[in-house]
Amino acid sequence: MVTIAIIAVCFAVFGLELAVQATGGEDALAALFRSYGVVPADLLAALRAGRIADPAVVSLISYQFLHGGWIHIGANLLYLWIFGNNVEDRLGRPGFLLFFLAGGIVAAFAQVAIDPRSDVPLVGASGAIAAVLGAYVALYPRARVLSIVFLVVFFQLTEVPAVLVLGLWFVLQVIDGLASLGVDDVVGGVAIFAHIGGFTAGILIGLLVRSLRPRRVAAG
Image (tube, rainbow, N blue to C red):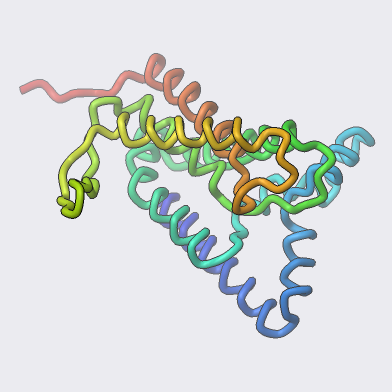
């Protein structure tokens, strides 16, 4: 399946990153991110010049498979593993791949729009996966996911509506994004507006797919 293939590619690329870091140090890894991550200032300069095949433009695809560390890749791919298969089932394999890549591109432009002069590379599948989460909410509004619920000092596993879990996640992204406006260094270096842009695009596309291709239900 495409979901598994994307996860495999991300881990393979992450292995390459570790090799680059091991042999060349942090400077070599930074150079890799600079070459294949989305650098807002470079991207806009290339687009203004009409250089569509420029590496800065191609990075809109390549940046989605780079990650900044174990937590970054682990959290991203866990979300993709949980929610990706269902969205892929609705869109089909080719459709899901195009949707994933397009979601990542929209997410990148959302972040670029907030800080167009930035020379800090944007890396990670977070934006594309946010699009998957948005599509999941639109396509499966009644679905429930197994979550950890904390009760003071205790916790338990229980099924919670996916729309509540992912809706709360999106609200937190919006709050963090608004709080980061005007701040020179976004907390943790997280591209919050890429998440917001990807999630919003995913919901819109999911609603469109839902209206054009209603889910088939077998008659009992």
